[in-house]
Length: 374
Image 1: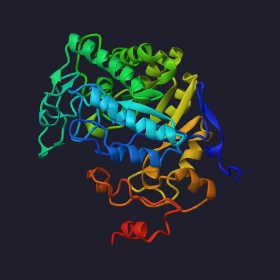
Image 2: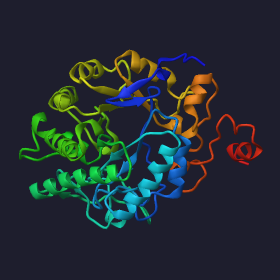
Image 3: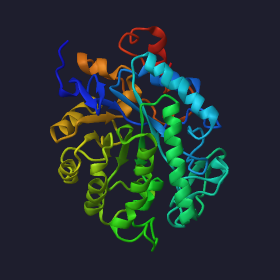
Image 4: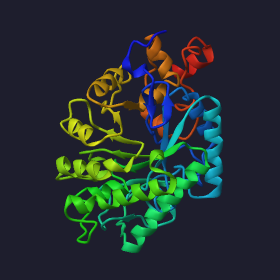
């Protein structure tokens, strides 16, 4: 069938051809093994969704200290690399393409989870309890990163990027969003430093810039994307200069030849979008803010509006979670599965993870029974 939406028109990411403009957004789902090795479930999950134009795999830690929650994957040990290789081999065999998101949690972590005291730009704790292997516990005051610690962390990101390429990924996404370590350096309430990494916006963007450039030097800039979430207050971060902070960051990296800039929490009518579009010469990925309840179209209208506002590709998360064959459903105008109990996203088993039916399976009594909760 001829595409009835611009989302289904062919595109590209640098020299990488894409069959359409729909990207699967990174979705943390806590299905790795306790040691951070990707599980067999994860290989099946991503293979089910290989029809996405590009899959950006879930947040993955570049070192042990950066681990956020239990059952989060890593990319800093040999078994983790081998585990991810099993995932990418399966997805590639199904025709898919994957980038890996590299995320350091910073103060979003706990010794009971990682074995280490978390680190941050300043000793400002997360203002809420955090989930650990033994349940929710009060957050602890993180260690302030020293200059040597900053250099080691940057080196860990570069090493993790090389590991990701060895694991079969086509590239990596540097996560500078959602209140994690890089975002903590950007935010004024979590970065209280008085050295060259704190204070004015030109200093607070330095860590993100240095991490991104180190990763680009390690694996090539065309294999590196950057994710940001302007104005997002998740995990207790606050920015007082969002309107100047992110244009400064985009302008600084605009000439580096990166694969893409990924904007999350910005819809088509956000005043920052045209400014960032004008500053960024390469591929721009939009990721619409769809609210707590997913629209019945899975975000299709919001995605089309983002394309109309200048995005080149659009990433959707929960729509791909609930619909392994999302692309087929959009192409055929078929109804979408609803996201079931959101807690199932994180419970660790196959339920709410591998059992969402495709259109072909919708009439299968086994899937119907599971989906209806019987």
